[in-house]
Amino acid sequence: MSSYDAFLNRRLLHFLATADAGNIHRAAETLGLSQPALTVSLRNLEQDIDATLFERSVKGVTLTPAGELFYRHAGALRTASRQAQEELKALRIGAGVAWSATVLPQVLRDMRRDYPDLAIDLLTGVGDQLAMQFAEGRIDLLLVAGGLAGHELSDARREQLVTLPMRLVVSHDHPLVGQGLVGVRQLAGYDWVGFYDDDSFVQLAALLTARHGLAPPRMAMRANSVAALSTFVRGTDAVMVVISSLASAMRDDDLVTLPLEEPLWDMPVSLCCRELVADRPVTRDFTERLRRAILAAVEGG
Image (cartoon, rainbow, N blue to C red; front, side, top):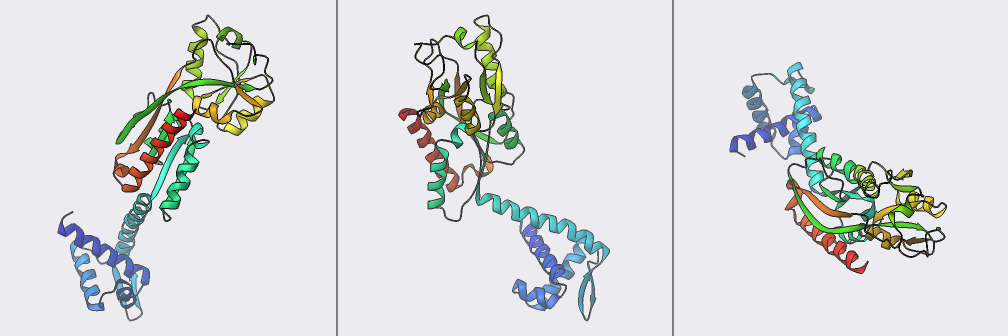
């Protein structure tokens, strides 16, 4: 930034403070300036833009029509600057439901413990949804399994962390439990459930069944909630398709993973980071902790 730009920014702040206070003396006290110095700054600004910004009287100052127009634009710049500073103090994360239910909570708890002033925004969804949020600038870090095909993630660093297989989770009393290795043709007689708006899941499931000359699976339910899907599966004969790390975390007395004759398909797990925040120490620390946590979960699963 040139010295002129820096000087102009100070003048904008002087103008905004004076307009907000309605009085040059009070504005000068707020800014830590002498009243003559602030008066000179305001006069210079008016000369630079060739417009009178204030009507001056013994009671104080009020904005002229030109001043009101200038205030709207200068105020918008101030608001944008404050928002940018707040965003730079935050971790704005988008994560697939599998990670939000497994490794992320502990990583975020540790980050908040070590960075008490850190604000954390976590948006949970599936790859296609989150890629759109990333492209629109609503999140700065994106952790997903698959689901990014066809999305142009500009101004971002992308790292593929690991590739994980998909698994089938069913109720413990499902008819296929205890039947040995399960084939795709056996699955054709049952409803499937999966995550809402995950187009890659629907396409890959259809390709899997098509290889065996079968119609696409019947989708009984799609949701963006692990709890909703697992509760549904517990009370039906439906099969739930999830990434292996989530399948391991879901195993309990009511849910089991079916052994399969052949793999379903694999999903790449990717971490995308916006260039603007990639080199912040807190971002680097978070991404390293997340990377270690994911690899540990994979090895432990």
